[in-house]
Amino acid sequence: MSFLFFLKTSLSKISTVNLSKLSILATAVFISLIASFDLYPSPTNADFESSKIESDILNKIKNVSDRNSYESVKTEIFGKRGILTDLFKKIGSLNQSERKEYASKLNFLKTKVTEILEKKLADFDQSEIDKKLKNEKIDVTLPGRAYFTGKIHPVSQVIDEVTSIFSEIGFSVEEGPDVENEYYNFSALNTPEHHPARDMHDTFYLDHSKDLLLRTHTSPVQIRTMLKSKPPFKIIAPGRTYRHDSDQTHSPMFHQLEGLHIDKNVNMGHLKGCLYYFVKKFFEVEKVKIRFRPSHFPFTEPSAEVDIGYKIQDGKIKIGEGDKWLEILGCGMVHPNVLKNAKVNPKQYQGYAFGVGIDRLAMLKYGINDLRAFFESDIRWLEFYGFDPLDVPTNYRGLSR
Image 1 (cartoon, rainbow, N blue to C red):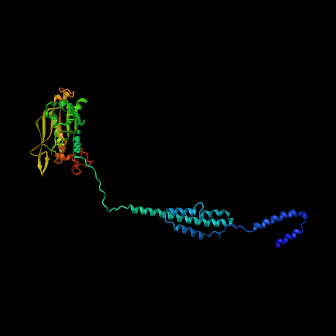
Image 2 (image 1 turned 90 degrees about the vertical axis):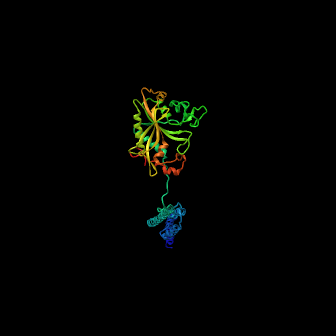
Image 3 (image 1 turned 135 degrees about the vertical axis):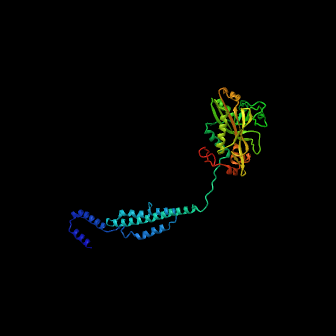
């Protein structure tokens, strides 16, 4: 009221000329008065009820039960239109004196809520880890899982053993085809046209002309080797051979090893020394009795069959001693006609050859009674007679276990 009385008194003293100036002055005073009244008050500390807001937020977090609800509540609090996001937006409308305290309380609440949410997430992670550990738990008291390792067949083992022995004295390995022609298998080896080995009851022919056949021995490898190279030759030729025969000691398919040594001044003494060395090494004995019996083969002259001494001890054959004899191979000096067929001059070169059944060697050395068992694919038999894959034969650490 005092302000209006002052205004009225002042106006009565002012002339009409000054009315326009007075009007401007009154307007300015009125605006000043209006500004002094807090018609739209800004938020204050009283408007920020931190305890209530904190309680609401904590209740929301408490109800979180999985990752999906966790993400939903986190968005509701910190999202673009989240609870705390809206409160932070009000800071700009506060008075300078209120802004600091308001922001401090809000930051404290944000830190607290963030820590609670992080702990909640860590609990979920740990819960998942515990669940996996429980489901994937290994019972260390259970027996280990059995595993099967393959075995080396006795035939393969013996081939490796024989190869190792002959390689020590300078022999190399040569191979040839199982399907052979008549010339390499018979004619080149000085086998007569009427020889029984050529009959169909002894040889597997593959055509009516009897030109193609399954080789009956590995001797054709010797012819092929001499034709493609020049002497001297010192080779062994292991491989499969085929004949019409099947019983306890014979099979239609069997394994054989042929040896050939061609050079100048090679004689029967070299042959005997080579075979004596082989028998001792293969059967792993210090002493062995060997005898050479005269025989006949079309591709050697003179020819012989080799017997070794043995005795029966504890129901098993013991090689090297005793008064019994066992035939193991055939041998002889290469026939001059064979050298001629292989384009080798028999007046300059001569040599010896021998052939031994690999399956028979395996039976003698490892006590296998029936040759047919070699090819029956009985896993139990192979488990018993087979060899460890890492048991590689060498003359330095022993051929066999």
